Image (cartoon, rainbow, N blue to C red; front, side, top):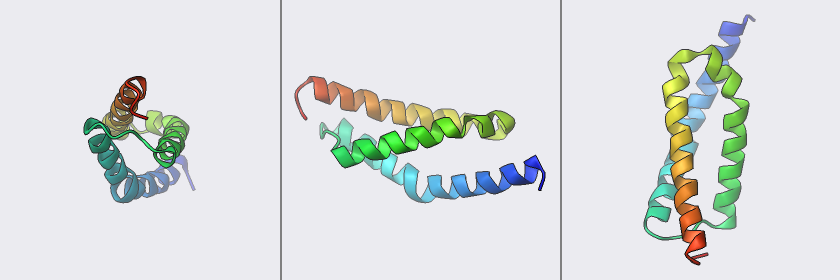
Amino acid sequence: MNTNSSDSAVLTVLMRRLAKQRLPRAQALLTQVENGIPLSEYDIAFLEHVLADTRAALPLMLRNPAYQKLYAQIILLYGAISCRALDLEQQGKR
């Protein structure tokens, strides 16, 4: 299996996981923190796991420029969640 077909298979799995699991959960978390509801330990563990996966996917994204804009948007989404959650934490809402 060459790199392109290997990348294609991995990208297919990642896109399915993003569409069915991670993006809906991330959008729900963003709504949650925007409404002033702090993240639970479970939510934080989810974000830590997703961010670790995102870092691990960087080489794949660098090899596949067509996915780089989406990758950046996902990172920005998780960053927005994290920043708002930190604001809540600093306001004592945790």
